[in-house]
Amino acid sequence: MTVEPIRADVTVNRAPEDAFRVFTRDLGTWWPVEHYSMAHDRDEDGVKVESVVFEEREGGRVYEVMSDGAEGVWGTVLAWDPPRRLVLSWKPNLRDAPPTEIEVVFTPDGGGTRVDLEHRGWERLGALAMQAREGYGAGWTTVLGRFAAAAQAKEG
Image (tube, helix red, strand yellow):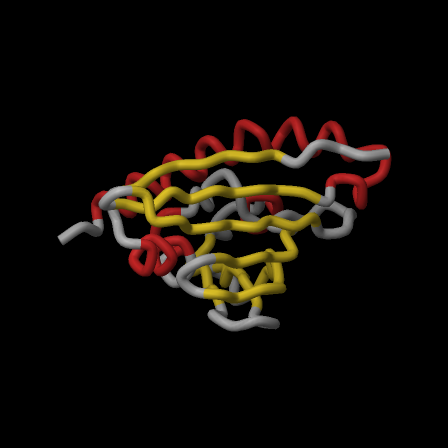
């Protein structure tokens, strides 16, 4: 079975180096943890995401630190090529399923940067592949919108 990747893009009025930094190092300032996080999946009163850490190197982790001290690993950096590209294994949830993969490419576009995201590897999820892909389609629209707003707000 082959499942078409999700492809989404956004253009921000930032240099590629700045856009890359906002997407990675500053991830915790704009990611919608209130909807997309392991703390949200736990659904326990009072447990919130305190921070999101992006280890900026191949083999680094992307993880959340929760208010009860627990860590939830969202993914691993598979490719690290700042400010052009990054690839991550991706599973920011508690579902019993293997990770998928996202690739994000940062391309100069006039005075700004076009950010292209591809989320692939749905086949790894077996019977849940199509359902998971459908859920992420709308999610990436929200996430990239939050990223673009954060990138614009950090100008200057």
